[in-house]
Length: 204
Image 1: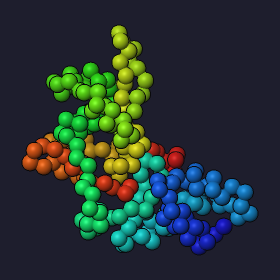
Image 2: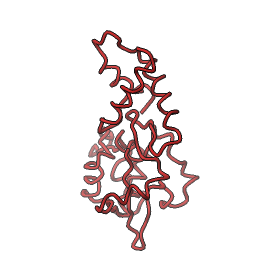
Image 3: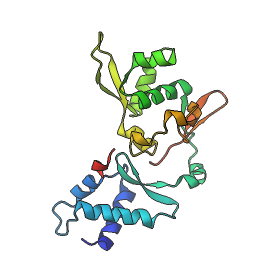
Image 4: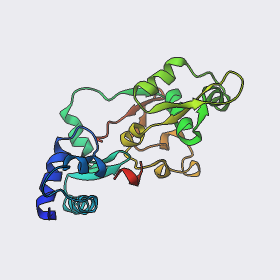
């Protein structure tokens, strides 16, 4: 299948998908077709689509789980006005906990408490797990065998990242307010996380 025929098919798939699609997932959709494209053909067509949408209001973006269409950040202000629902609000404590997990993983709840100097509630960890930002990575081989926590692909997808390597270094963020541009703290120290439509290369 040549690229001219493949591109509009991929365009339709990305428009219809409710989650990022990897090259492997796309390849499986063509299994059995007479003109089944190879993975390199799919990658090339995706590259061409990325270029095609380069100057548009939407972009084809690669994140941890694959590729997806999303609104360019330049236009989020106007798009956000389509919805009356307010974005979710998260406490500074919860975001500090998430940041520690992201940067220090694998990490136990006790280690988080030692660093923050305060207890970490069960509900806080539960919230992060329900958001599918954090998961259990097993247990630390010490007395009590506490759970080790780490971030998920959903965490990377939500914050528009391909991998943890794209997180800013700790030296680059002097304050949690700078942890991610999607975070804005209000005057009470609570955080508003703006929804983003929106790992590795082997998935793509």
